[in-house]
Image (tube, rainbow, N blue to C red; front, side, top):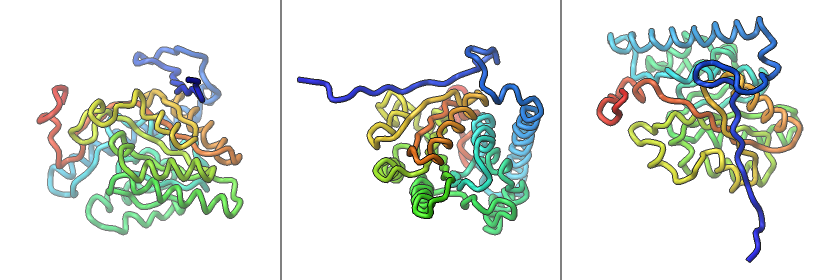
Length: 273
């Protein structure tokens, strides 16, 4: 018996849970003014999220999906993208969307039941929210195929959760991205819970990033609470995609600090809720 191939998944982290540097910081760390703006956006998203939940609890907004705990991941994704890149979100990437020009008012319109919220005035390359799980992955793969056919040096980015990485649409996107060398970045925001299903019951894989291996594309796991790690991984993946070097799965490990949505009560299945 012989071994045909070996694979490994790298883990990227610059800051530990206490905010201390555990590796030499990337170039973004030297851009002081930009870092202040990114911090301000993360703070804005935290306040927006709290306000949206309050609006829902008082009957002024429909069911709402909180992004509490995802701020660094979402803002880092947006900060690494170019304006002309295509973005196919899930349903809680407010930091990415606001960075790319979506107005908070448009987000509130959508969660208030008004589809005009999906008609972004300042984000023409952003797709509508996708509540059906992981359908946006194939939408992004199709957009990436179009970019490749047209010879445009841009990339498509989609975001799903850890639960979404178990869906057929995710695997289909990974497969076609590898077979066709598509300029695609598939982000898996691993917040440890698919509604009430914990990570260890969703997949027997040691990492979710390694799902890229079956499709013949790159995979990396990063600390999703580390803005530097998120931005660096996305920047590398996007540059590879735009250069015609194929797709990447970026797993961002974080934690869902809130209920799944305002229609959920995490205390029924989670001790730390």
